[in-house]
Image (cartoon, rainbow, N blue to C red):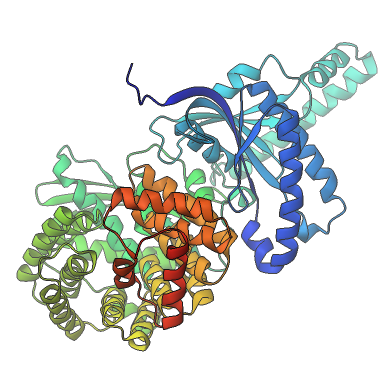
Length: 633
């Protein structure tokens, strides 16, 4: 057996969080924090009573480990009962309700910390629970179904993020099984007059059912209706939509990019409309290739409308189907099938987009309509940009180089296409900023020249203004960087990337609270955001002095990095500074130790070159935190 083999253990994992935590914090931060501390103590007490242990408690979340599923479930029921009783003394809008998810799974123990899919599943099914409710996985259900006097409702097999196979999910109903059985016994003892009443009721039910069938036959409603109460995020105050990736029905898998491109173009067009709330492409594409229900998409992303469709290409012919669904009612607002020539693909995308806006009664101004239809007529150029964009998002040196080649081809095929030039400029900026270029100065020079060319073609692209914002920031021109970033958001009100990049600029400029607001908006627009988003909001919270929030975000960032989604270097750096802010110096030093394992020659001198704060006092504050954490000079 290898000496470094990690300890594994089958454990029951309980994950809990507060429903509507952001709303509570927004209304009264101090009262919410005080209540959370009190209720977290309640949870910890019950967890100890049922032989469990609290593993972690970032933000409003709590993670606990039990050796017994029975203990975990009984503990959860006790917790919800206690919290419910305490909430009776609180006004309706200040009640703090917890959602709880429980899973039985294999975990890796590393000291006091645990890792593994078993934890992820418990966190995902927690999101299926209502406020004050409990959901458990199929593995947990199999252990307790005949041991606890509880009712269970099967919610079906659920597709959960980052887990390959669907997960069986059950909702716990606190009423006992015996109460249901007792009801059955009472029914057996009904007298003649009671039977007569029941017969009359049965006839009435048949009449009602017949009326429903007759009245709704022509207007069927889907059984899979999204619950606003179950939504992870509150619905926006304007039409909200998620465009799912169109399914490639062609036999040729090389046409996958073609189907993706249609979805991306519709998302991009809708994102320009300030009257809409549009989920970012990165989040909707997490559902690609998965048999998800519209209800699930709506509840997980917090939107009312979902667009789904498919495309089949055969030579120069295409068949596209699309349907727009109101997930909160199950109604199909419209559904169409289009059989067109391949050369008509761009006009068809515009037609589908306009159909959506018309169905949702969104009226466009003349300027908005002009921005909506901006694209290329060159199908080959379009294909190169779609392929290049997928590579660029991988954010590695090699993928960036390959993306650059695709964008160069697209720009040559259609020299008047603004998007092609803008994306090409981004690749040069990335190689200069991330350190992938042997000549960073030359790379940033190329980025500037190409950005000027893109802006000359079309000055209304949010992406090109966001690019300029980052170029100005690299040059230390903070006011220009902020102005360009704000312009990007005004042109792309639903562009998550523009929001998170401006958040970084605001943090650098010392406007920390505004940075937090922008980063949180980016996460709302893209609930399945890239891991590096967490770095942006972590920096803003820490510099604003919100160390507890920064710690919660920093732990999430490190956790995702350790799963291979990002480089853990910056996560360890951020956590070391946060722990110093909290006065927990030993924990801060443990993270600097990890930093030096990754980069042994890292020092305060090198750290100074990485810090981009405008105010010298902020620079020194950041360096002093790293110094206290043990980073050498």
